[in-house]
Amino acid sequence: MTADRFAEAERIVAHDEPHAFEAVVPPIVQTSLFTFATLADMVETYAGRKVRNVYSRTTNPTVTLFEQKMAALEGADDAIGFPSGMAAISGAVLAFVAPGDRIVCVRHVYPDAYRLFETLLKKLQVTVRYVDGADHAAVEAALPGARLLYLESPTSWTMQALDVGALAGLARRHGVMTMIDNSWATPVFQRPMWLGVDLVIHSASKYIGGHSDTVAGVVAGRSELIRHIRQTICPYIGAKLAPFEAWLLLRGLRTLPTRLRAHEAAALTLARRLAEEPSVATVMHPALAPAMPPGLGGTSGLFSFVFDDSIDIPAFCDALTLFQLGVSWGGHESLVVPALVARGQVAGPNSAVDFGVPARMVRLAVGLEGTEALWADLAGAIASARRAS
Ligand SMILES: *Cc1c(COP(=O)(O)O)cnc(C)c1O
Image (tube, rainbow, N blue to C red):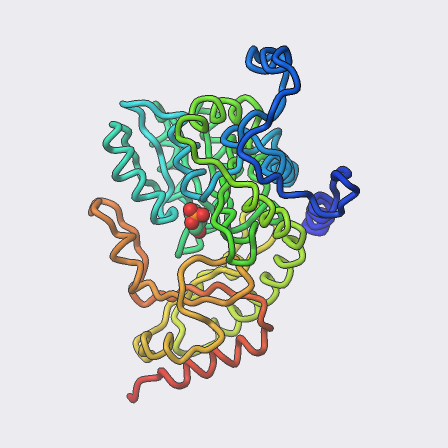
């Protein structure tokens, strides 16, 4: 199934309809507006009887091409590009909630999604109940009367891979809409639409772009849900993906399956070797968990592990040379970030929520520098950060 998935993704990212001037690469249509030859044409368009580009806050050909490719990759009818992953998350959520609504959210979602729920949504009198996504009884108990089930799998930091199909099935039984942040797995490894999820969200700043040069987001789904977001959110929030960013994302997509193969292989090797290290207490990587959920057809390059007390974590981070200290992930470069930096943010103001991110956790984004060079970097830094006992 994974082989077929790769083949289908490869065909979608490689194939285009012919572009203007027989250009092999689509043009960047860098324009704010599109003109009309006749007033009749303009009138027909404004009356909704003719569909064409009018103004780039609404549609732009380069952006549309990216949106169509993302929809094809996700098995969705349509998609909307956003100028960031957070714009995609807030746009999708705000389109479907109203004061008094309740969201059920799995634990350990992306920290800024959590903060969106705890600040702006609270102000709009939308409440959020956090549940352990692996505890299906707890999820089901929270669903009656909820407006939305918000998923992320694997979860941020803890890398808990959830049974997305089972969770979507529970939500459907209770008439609750589902959304998932699919940034980690990408459509190459996980197709949430096929698992019954209503809307799929990406931070395209990660693997979709793939080169750490673009901040962008996407929402994909069935045409009526996408149309609702397009009509009720996009024009007024005005958060629109720019043509140049869409062009960079189209370029990134060309190599998405190929890059993911390399990220997957390198990260798996490093995770397995770290699991053998005496100073490593736990490795959080979906492929090292007792079982991968059905529907997750592969693993990408981001995972976490927990050091025991024998390692000085600041010394470890500073000793690394290939792994650079930095947030984000999904680019060509390897990155490291210890949980001690992010924990204060993630724990947030809601003390009732047990985020359970251990203080001695370290997150690695495994890039494309070569597995053995990356392992030498990790092993060397571990050796130099070992405390005298
Ligand atoms: C980075 C990230 C986001 C936010 O995306 P931006 O493009 O930075 O706004 C959302 N979800 C996950 C899982 C992320 O890693």
